[in-house]
Length: 312
Image: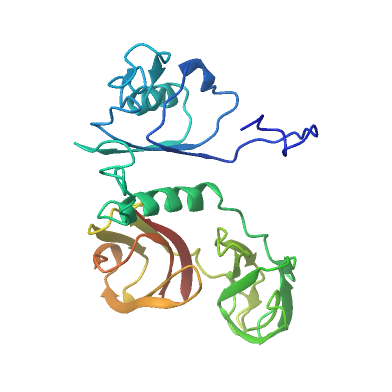
């Protein structure tokens, strides 16, 4: 195949892998996995693979018992990646052989029942390692009550932007959607949040600008709203079929609303729940959700937060 840094010619480039998808693979030497390089890896392997060893041994042992060198399969790589503290995922398929998602008899018969699980495990891994931070919105961070301000993020080719506001109302968008106009209709601490989705349909992590101006009441006392409520999701990542738990630390009782979006911004689930003061735990049925990455937007007593949810 030639060197990693070549393009089919003598030209060489400085490149580095963003991540590795190892489908029933092995390495000649475990020292190739270096903590200083730190490349995230996902490994998928059948325990009955006699072409490439699941643990360690010689490849093609049945056909060529001593022809090929000793190699180290997924279980050994898993241990090495753990010891070097490199992010990785390991999916073992008991009783399955080599290329088990479509070549059980040497004839192309995919997709069989293993195609979707393997495809989704690789895809979701790539989504995770290719995630990025949405730029923090810029604009007037001390806007007064009842004022109007513009907020923006850098416009990048192919990207779209989703905005949410606490303590105000979005009254206008630019053509590119990278600029919004907000009318602030509450006092105290407010915020504006942007989420960028790039040309690959990957959603960035939410970025929030806090608007911290206060309003002077007739008594002469300066009032500032309390900090935002805290929402927690667990487990996250969530296995398909598991129930999702949502923990809410509420300063006051109220009606909490929730909307779950997929990566292209479509609402796939929404509901509301009355919560009590202090700590609440809500169980959310998610067995109807395909694997992927979702954004869950939650609002309680005027405070809104958006969190990312992974479903494996």
